[in-house]
Length: 273
Length: 262
Image (tube, rainbow over all chains, first blue to last red; front, side, top):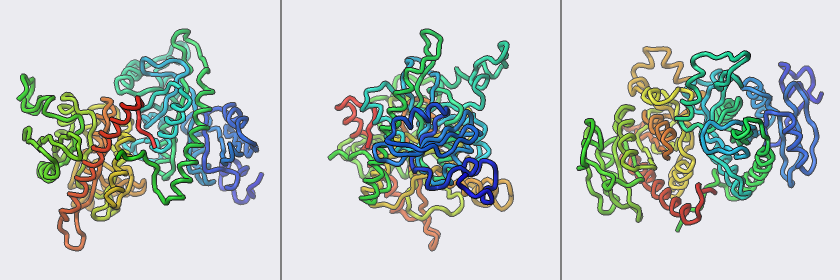
């Protein structure tokens, strides 16, 4: 316990009082799984476990000299919102969610990466923050950094709008226990497919909405793990998402340093002569 | 005149063909703004003036562009996007006057939108309200670059597309619910929009096209009059931005890359 108990206003503040602002880097990776936090931090120069509070396993350290943190968001909008609120209060400014998914669109192969530019707000949690008509949009610098990183590694990737559901099974059109279904489920996937939505998860719309409201940067990369050939889960793309994310942090860090040095507001492509 | 039409607005009353139009289209709100814009173009040719839709095609900074006024609300805007996209347009830059949410806009400061709050009504006919109304990130970057190049003051923000213009004025003192909505949007950091960005962004996302938008407040608060240089700056910045997008597209084609990146 690093924070004085008297300073804690509620159970989740500073992840149960286990984190102080100096424990969290500006760049934070927010996977949904604790195992993925460990996979990230194994690739860093060094790390320290800052907190283990409910779903929120927090590691901080350095990656190739860049201060970095990773915090498991847990599964779903509610725990994601807690993670984002706490991390933002502790000084995080750039968030990259890294997850696994099944594609809604045709032509996507298992192991492909999907980089989100915006998210359909079916998460419900974000409605508690702002009206539903508000757009859940990724930060364009983070989107560009993720694309650049994927291209430099020659990974297959797709870019576009994704969907965030408030339930993993029924909300995404997958039957519940004993084949439970109701009529709304029958159209949801075909409607989103027609709307060019790439994939499902249960966190991104919450992350994008909160970061947009708070003036913070957020992006998201998912690896496609549903193998349509076998019908089985195949996490072959997870390491690609991890590598791409870490490269994107390096790119963003370089851009941020350049912006600071040259007093620029944004990093932009070159203008042709 | 195109060959055949199947409804009154098809190909803008049958007066516009694919050959008449550039894939890169600036979308001012008003027909007078189209005329103001194309004065800066070379070989500007009037294609049609059908309902709100005044269409010109010409050249600007070496790039063939079109301009089409979309009107003040969602219905004509959605009609314009439908017709333009069917005629081969793939990149849009909207430019118009803003409805400030709560006094957040300085006269002449460009607001470059990354997304729009969908209070337009029309976009609900296209897709569920949870779908994000977002600008394409290449349009956002091109517009920022163009505003910087002109040395103009700008903000990059989420804007709100309101279905009503009067909502923002007389009605807010009558209906407390409206005031609460405006307070909520101001608290969320939302800037004023032109009323139609949400429609353009949603259609473009659904159809795999690119769109961006600039809104600007042209009212001088001291004199309560419109400053015409503000309008022209916004129009020229939007034309600069769409020209830059065309040049970036050439670069992408040359290097066989799907996106332009910093």
